[in-house]
Image (cartoon, rainbow, N blue to C red; front, side, top):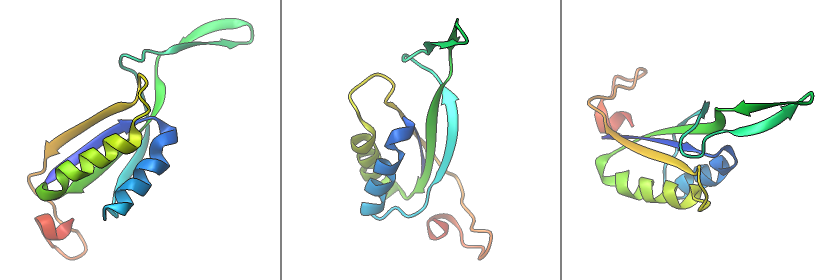
Length: 112
């Protein structure tokens, strides 16, 4: 089992969600986050004073999938989230040791 964590631009969330739905992914966790990488921040004017915004708004998507679906999900996210510009985001793939569905006690792939 794999946990796919993706950081993307907020306006790409609907496209990524729809693309994942088309390949059969029905569950995900979405969190609004802030961060920066190579994109750095940007300067803004507020009441005549210029200040630097270091952290940019992003969206973090977490999807737990079976090992067999992992590459397809990663490719789908990459295609749906890409704009070709700096700041498109990152995809992290990590191993999951165990998953338990609280309601039924199902474990691992059955719990996904």
